[in-house]
Amino acid sequence: MTAKLKTIPKFSERRRHLRVEIVLLGRYMLQDKREFPCQTVNMSPGGLALDAPVRGAVGEHVVVYLDQIGRVEGKIARHTERGFAIQMTMPFAKREKIANQLTWLINRDTLGMPEDRRHERIIPNRRHSILHVDGEREHIVQLIDISVSGAGVSTSIKPALGTRVKLGQTDGQIVRIFEGGVAVRFDHAIPADKFDENIKL
Image (tube, rainbow, N blue to C red; front, side, top):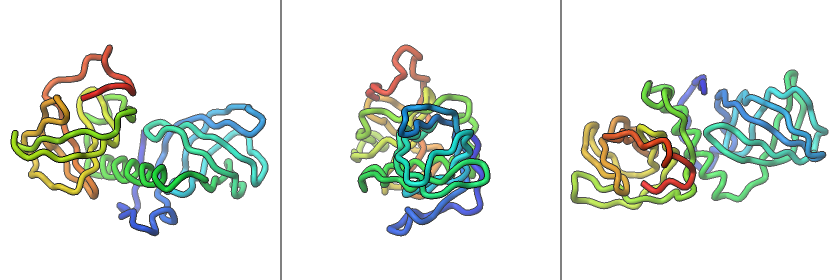
């Protein structure tokens, strides 16, 4: 995954109109069930533009599966020189999730997190967890994504860098702070046989 940044967006109520340049690989399925590989050009919580080998018709429903993001869907709004743009038709909660994911991905690339680039990241099915800070305070947080070496956590708290934490039952420390959350590096890598979307930290 490569993200190109012009500005770190603050996804407020207008966030679905704010697009950022970000390159994510994926696949898309047109209404006739044909599937093709694709790559994002830019994306917001309300829409995205794709480099795509086959254009669907304007107004056609399309489903897209993107690395780091997961499934999104919507209608083709217009054709572009190299593909097409989609206006996403999804519930508000899903758009909020995408906003958090985009914020994390862009800040991660901007701040430079080599440990996150070495390992595949997944979006867990169990999104909520408990963050124990310094062995005392407990906070309910939302998981943005997880790798074998760490996790992106959506939270309003701002522990200092290096603060010892326990995410669920997994020990680690705060290694990055970004708009809307923190990055936790685990003390020990998650075993490969336990690393999938059903993981419980």
